[in-house]
Length: 342
Image 1 (cartoon, rainbow, N blue to C red):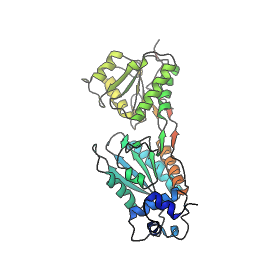
Image 2 (cartoon, one colour; image 1 turned 120 degrees about the vertical axis):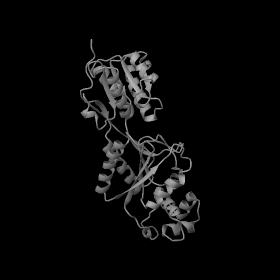
Image 3 (tube, helix red, strand yellow; image 1 turned 30 degrees about the horizontal axis):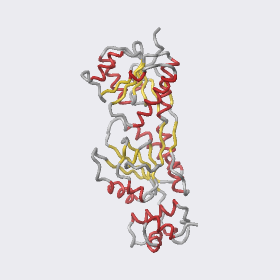
Image 4 (cartoon, one colour; image 1 turned 60 degrees about the vertical axis):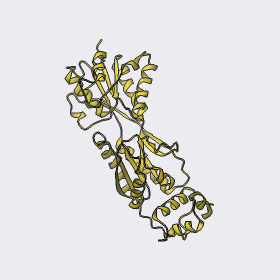
């Protein structure tokens, strides 16, 4: 059975500090109280006793939104937020929104994020961000603060495992390749992605090319085209796509999908008569394009719901090992893809 001494040793404080913290003493800072309480829970200490009962539990979780990219990620945040709030409400938890903007050079925001989270009074947070390598979470990790990340993120350059829920990007890429190759018969296929590809988009690429290679297509990765985010006729990547003249294109994200539409219209190639187009991730305009765009769709609401379930496991149980949970993607067929011409 864990003791005050065990908690004190992990926290690096005295047993008296542990007692005061769990008694909600005004002599102890809120940050220290949160740290000690979370350590106590993580090692299975019973907080329902005399000291623990004095800690007021407010039954609330936070949504921590960290961003520096304002455009195509907004619908991801909106749909995931719906999943979080609905499941939290169904389990009796209030939701507190905590926003934080991370500039490109964010070396000094460690204190800022931790302070915002602790002062909000939430028991744990779900982190939603479009940033691949997140900074500013080291202090919260030291406090053993319960956190679940939506998406496979790298946090503070640490090798420490974290809790996260994410879409199965690798198999989503394989799904796109299988559809274009096996269902529609395309063999001249280009993957179009951005120059600086985050690791989850690299997973899509790996799944896509893995399936094509295993199906016997050789040198298929030579048809990978990296382009500027927005269509620019002077960009070498877009010019290379014109030279390749693929019969089908897989766009690695929704933003690139929009740019591919602009490109194809600019060079006079018809969809799907001249080229089929499939995009990883849906976007609000895709069902209404002419023609509507076929997509590999993430279940963003389910990501939010699963994040809540995982966070509540962290809050209500002890000694749960960090883990990643994957949600399958789905092929949504529309009219932008057609069988390859013979």
